[in-house]
Amino acid sequence: MMTIHIEELTFDCIIGILDFERLEVQKIIIDLSIDYHYYNNFFINYAQVIALVQKDMINNKYELLETALNELEIKLLSTYPQIKRFTLKITKPNIINNAKVSLSKNFSNL
Image (cartoon, rainbow, N blue to C red; front, side, top):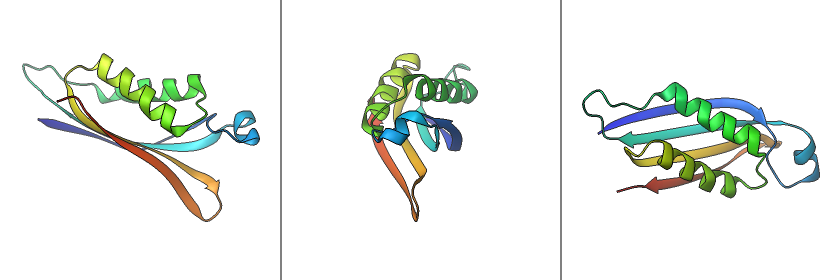
């Protein structure tokens, strides 16, 4: 079993339910850990994973972090069937003045 760690993937997108969040992009940070079976040079390209996650978040303009997590689960597991487990965390570092707010979920495809 191999584990890919993608830490502090940072970009701007529309996310949230508040009026101003629907009008202006805000910074988000993605942390992702993927456990998968590596065999016969069959690997997961982490650059492609980053592109998939970033494109999905920017294009879909999710209202809820919960929806984003669930949709990314479907996309990652369908694109990379060799994934056995992964943890995905989305952080909104600037939504509260004195705190970073995050939501995370563990997924299993065992």
